[in-house]
Image (cartoon, rainbow, N blue to C red):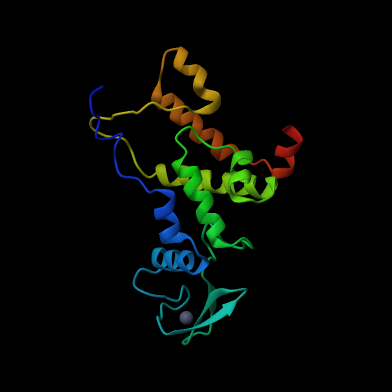
Length: 187
Ligand SMILES: [Zn+2]
């Protein structure tokens, strides 16, 4: 079989992931770097002078100019969560690395949380991934690797229309307003 360099791209192994994001402080540092690459900036007044307090083990930034307190996770995917960020990161790793997709039930087994929690994590992460991908439009020569997209797999036996498939996936995710309790009832 011909060597396809795309299939042999370097990814992130589980040991590499744990080395980089295996602890709560490392995850906090990663969120900090992503949110404020040049250091903390107050969302109210724009000042960078601040002090750091601790709230439930996580940093809470207090602006020295206007005294506003800003948590590390406020306004992000992790806002208001009581779960450790390391659990969120692990869930993101498993979902993003699963070539054939991962159910909330499988995620529950991998990260050791309850099913409603796994469902919520799964839903929020998938919705964020869709929102991220919406910013890009395919252009030029597009290569598609073999993929399995759950309920849409039957379409591979019919006339395959990638654009239609992607549109349906995006629309269905954005319309999804179910709750974990409803998902459990339907399971
Ligand atoms: Zn301020």
